[in-house]
Amino acid sequence: MFKITRDPLAAESIIAQVNKGGNGGICAFVGTVRDNAGGKEVLRLEYDAYPEMAEKKLAEITAEIKDKWGLDEVAIVHRIGKLEIGEAAVAIAVGAPHRKEAFEACQYAIDRIKEFVPIWKKEYFADGEVWVEQSH
Amino acid sequence: MKLTVKFFARYREITGNDEVEIDVEDGSTVAGLIARLAEEYPGFPADPHMVAVNAEYIEGDAALNLGDEVAFFPPFSGG
Image (cartoon, rainbow over the protein chains, first blue to last red):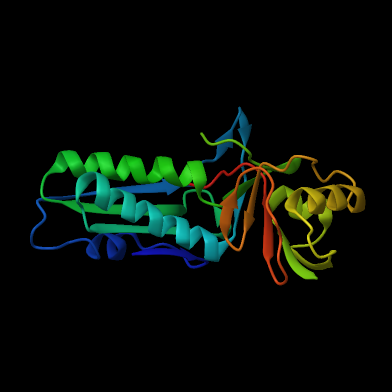
């Protein structure tokens, strides 16, 4: 399951989607809005995306995880629009028979998102705003 | 022939548009389109970070066809 949405993320329901009987564990990652960047206070973020293409790339990531680890239970949801400090921007859940593959595949998914999925964030500061053009 | 051109994030702010319809000559390529955009929109880069045609990344130049959707991307920062 993969989706770009403007709605707040519900991590528990995303985790529930990968909770299948054959799994011995679920690894979930939730990326949240940090209140600082480069030593400056961040007031909020705005995410922009090319939704049709981003969803296609998220589908490719789930296919890559299937190839590399043989895992079928992967859910990735990325939120766009304006987000406040502490809100979830991305939620990933991977269910696997054993924890090692779950951790590895979950980390792989977030790394790939930063690498090749057309999503951008803008940081709002007290004195201006800037599109972030490198992944952290 | 008409193309749909999409701009995202910083490129959208440079051009003041998220989507425009552009009429180019038959046989035009991505490189030609970029040159035209750079002329039309001051600050538009001569070498955009990434380009997608019909939602697939392209590398280098590529031929364009009637109705293509060409998207220009600055470096990504999702997650």
